[in-house]
Image (cartoon, rainbow, N blue to C red; front, side, top):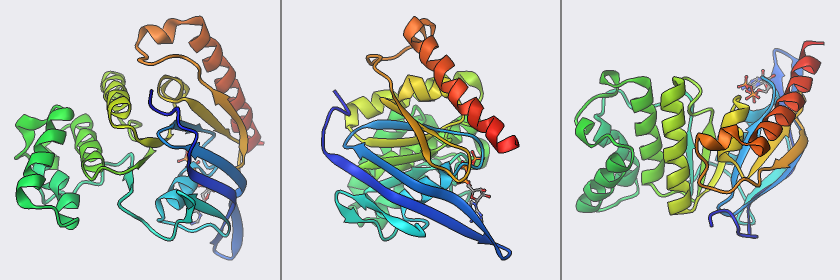
Length: 263
Ligand SMILES: Nc1ncnc2c1ncn2[C@@H]1O[C@H](COP(=O)(O)OP(=O)(O)OP(=O)(O)O)[C@@H](O)[C@H]1O
């Protein structure tokens, strides 16, 4: 099954990140160590401002650590790369391009042949259930549909690592549940390493093999909780004793950090 590999895909080694904000130092991350295995699904939870997005941006190569290293397949990350796909909460689609052209964009950049671009675009439109909206523009879509396009676009370039920053945060509960299950199906089928940030503890447990709990700023890893609930996980999974116990435990840990921020 996906995520059972022992190979380390992403190694985060003593990462510290300090921002300079109008002459003041803000330590966003301090001493973060984490190994993410190949094809593993890891979710990250923690109070607002604990450095989750900063960590994701560093793995994406959109930001650099002040000290420490992040390695991908043993090599230092020195910028964005096609082996990493990023999905943000705000869909970040090109408003002037149709749905199919948004998905095709990255494929064309890679120099893929026209027929292959069309084939791959059609395949991912189908996976996210938007084939009949291929010619629509983003402004004509609902939030959930836009996020489906963003996911299809990230998948289409076939990245080895998917970095997702609260991708379903702005969606209604039903669409969120639907997209979670589509994401899990695609993850099981296509074998990718997933690093997924969420504020929703239920979402973290339904998706992840391990949930990383971060402490209040300066962000550190407070605890890593294994989720040994077999896949496929469904709505019924959320009623199981194991799920509820994990939910209570993780929620309590995050709440403790939330209180620490407010002190
Ligand atoms: N570009 C930046 N310049 C200055 N400070 C920044 C920058 N990006 C993040 N920070 C600061 O770093 C800290 C961590 O921010 P980050 O966005 O990583 O947290 P987060 O855990 O993702 O928060 P949230 O859950 O609210 O999205 C915050 O104090 C934030 O103000």
